[in-house]
Image (tube, rainbow, N blue to C red; front, side, top):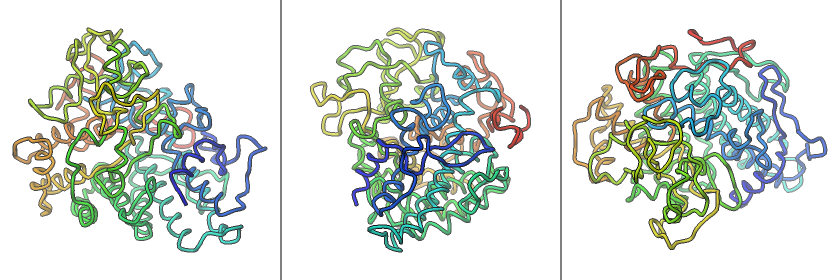
Length: 520
């Protein structure tokens, strides 16, 4: 069964599992169009439904009409929502007034309220994805009695992967919002879920992951587009990495052990950093450095989220046409996210990870209005359309709006840096060596492994990949005045923000059921 083709098919048709509402009080998964198929009658349909769950990370919905209630379907894509809430509140990215989209400035400044619609849409996306996972788990065992039935082994593997996908959304919910609705396939459709804090969710998610992981295929045996055992271990490691933030009890030894499960089988970084983010980066996905990616495809899996948003979405509309061609696209930039000066300043000379275009821009955010060719803020060119073979070739193959570069959820370089962090926290796990290997790949000299250097290295290595807010919080640099960056707190020079902002506000639409986080 060609999973890649099935994912494309799932992206292009109404979900057999149906749409879902956004309201916590009504978590039914029901079809938007009653004329659409609601019963799965063949093994192939179950596989397509399986692919549909995966596609929930990649696309907004059908024909770019989001499965959740948003004012812009493309903005409702899972990866775009996640990225905005992880990056725009940090020292890495900023969207200026030239877009003037409601609520974005509150993310830029870390001054959001419970009425910010990006928070509502993000929580809605997470709950939608969890519910689609639950509905699949409720029905998959029936696949033994349909035409062309699935084998027991196939069903076991599919169920394990969907449980990991569900755990991913619970991880993101815990990390960003600190609480949320808890519901599994054991609950009946329409049942009001229990509200749980991250402290209550954490052990349940951990236990479910540990139970599911042995039934997920290792990367060397897994199909492209499906998550591997190593990817599942990476999610487990991420949860342990942040255990001190989520529960008050650090779990560094457990984090190191989960990372070591990955390095047993995948232990080599890709030779060239920039190729990890180009249009042919699928060669590194799965049994390579990109442990878990959200597939993107210029022709068959088109989305205004993912790397399209971080490609032309982040390119200045006024740059010369030959620059667009250099990056592999014929489309004009949207002039969206730009680089904060703190990110550009973090790099030393000749670091090949500096995929930032300076041009005639200024490395400041003095003018956050129109972003012209002499405007404030450098341009990020990390996610390009061109293939590895055509990289930097202005005469190479050109593509339209949609990017084929897969979005990297988790990378092995992050695993290495997590082991370095575990070493700093007292675990003997050869962390200095792994830290050195990340720097060696980019021809950077060895430096001392300490908190400051590690947090800076995480920025240089992982910028714009959706981790920065969590990292700053874990290192005690997000709230307060320990670290100030441009426009933090709503003033250009930056200022302290209150610690309650280390979790987002529960959106107003959800507070009747979930309550509100302290401080809001």
